[in-house]
Amino acid sequence: MKLTILGSGVMTPSQNRYPSSYLIEGDDKKVLLDCGFLSLARLTEYGVDPQAIDAVAISHFHTDHFGGFLPLVHCRMVDSIHKNEQYKKLKILGPKTIEERYKKLREVMWPEPNEI
Image 1 (cartoon, rainbow, N blue to C red):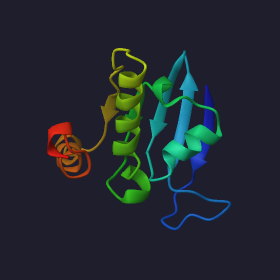
Image 2 (cartoon, rainbow, N blue to C red):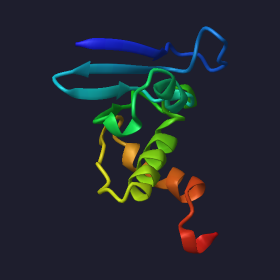
Image 3 (spheres, rainbow, N blue to C red):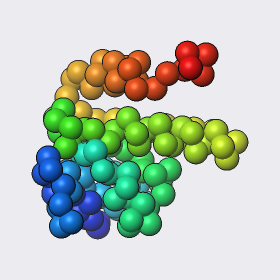
Image 4 (cartoon, rainbow, N blue to C red):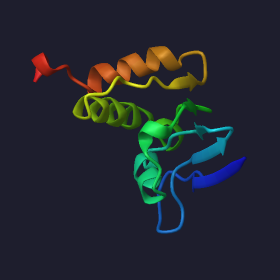
């Protein structure tokens, strides 16, 4: 198993610290523990394809732990469309209200093409 600290949990990023996000790799699986608002950029810096993420586990709903979740999902979906590939679903783990919160965020931040 390998642990990469993408961010160690700060609300105000600096050159040395980023919002919470930990990449756990093992048994050909990649899991993000928390997905702070700079997680996607940090994955890119480490050369990790967002499509390679198998699961995301969210500890709680502060933006430094959850703010990068919707951008990660959106990035993966758009990438799949551009590559004409089937979308690889993420396994999502988190507090019991995660599905409801995801739907609300998506409604606000991710308009359907006919809404633009």
